[in-house]
Image 1 (tube, rainbow, N blue to C red):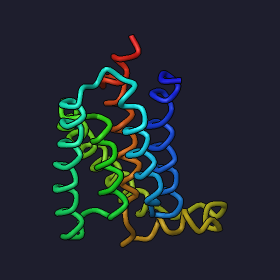
Image 2: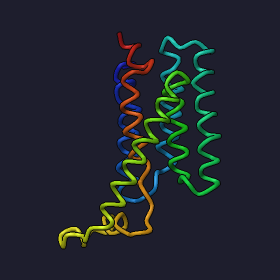
Image 3: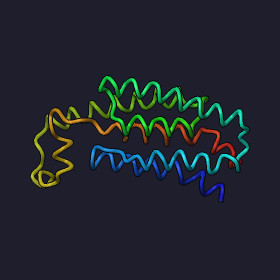
Image 4: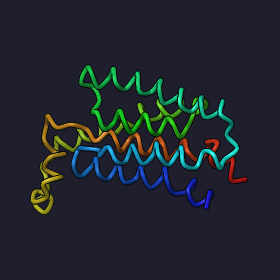
Length: 166
């Protein structure tokens, strides 16, 4: 059961968050709450000590401080900030810098892709889809949850959780 939880909770949650963000430009709070709850549900069954769990919480607190600041200045959405914080809780202090750097690079590439996409005319078949129209708007937002999810999945495979599976 532990292995199943390790292999599904974070990956499923971030994939769902990315898809939700892509289609609606929002990330529901329940996804971040599920990640936080999932962490505290399976952590006692892992080899994490209370000190290790404290370091995971510290990583989340650091990311929360950074993302709250970015949100306050309008550079990041609230759902993105909460998702990044919940992901940091899972990845821990040893992976949080790599996660943040990778998410930043992937977010930049995603932004460039959307800027290029928005310069092109929409094919007629795509013009009917409201979510595509929203993504195509010249002044529209970027679904940064996609970059956060991709970075989380790429870093997660090198995290404590995968090492704990032996």
